[in-house]
Image (cartoon, rainbow, N blue to C red):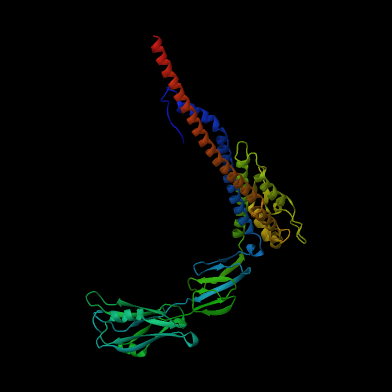
Length: 453
């Protein structure tokens, strides 16, 4: 910036004059600033359209494949005895089940307690003692070494801290847990070592080294014997080491809760129409949110009132909705036939009851209406949305165009700011010179008047 005088010679208000002239000079810059704000608003608006279109594409893509309609639900007629969950691979069927026995872990306790669990054992216990779980190739073993000075608490801690090596890796054992229980009274305590298998079933029962059992005065192994779960499915007797059974009914996890062979119950596996209907409802909601966004932006006074690109998004999707599927062997051609229809305001509505009824009555036709690789609605709608979202698609092309125009405006605004700086410098110099000249003339005039007077 050049001279910034307020008029030191003639009293001329240079700042005011320059400011007024610069206001006129700033009009092109103001116009560019307004345009940039408009483009930024439009850019933000298209960002919303893109986000909603992407959400719609995600929702409709969840209905493109046959497996998207294969959600299954397992229902137990007596959840106090068993519950179940079903994966999409489960086939619709009904099973009669009886639970005779639950799997449980084995628990063993010392027969004779000690008065003080912190005192060294009497007689002392020394040696290396093995604990074994499983048989054959699944057998695992860990051991502890005692030197004769350990207390009952120390023996417990050594059992819990023992290590086991599996596939060359050593880690703290989780096959069994040891604890101490006072089976006496506070006045006459009797502390006993209790060893429990961490896994259920007879295959996971822990076998205690006989020498350790003898050294500790024997173990009662009948407190809670290890047991396998025993149940029947459609009259076939089954035994498992766990109460969470995954390998009996394909795709179904059966969770045994209680045993009562006098109370048979039914497990029903069926298509999970609720889960599928929710997916359809999500797609309908996503479309309606997209249309609401576009409508708001394109209405009179809206950010995209004069831009038809956003409405073109809706028109392209509506064109898909209005084009019948015409799939060979399928008498369903429109989504309206399965409860999905347009309302007068252009939004979609879902008649859940009608959709569920159609899905239960003709599941293959309903699924094909969505998933057919060439004509299915989900396939075609997702393809249309993806094309518009591509880097060279309608939405991104519009966004790139706006970014390019903003970049051009920024360059023009930079040049305009440089021009304004130069104009201000020139004006201040000119008016400073004028002020000086007027001051000189004023002084000369005053001198002449004084001479003539």
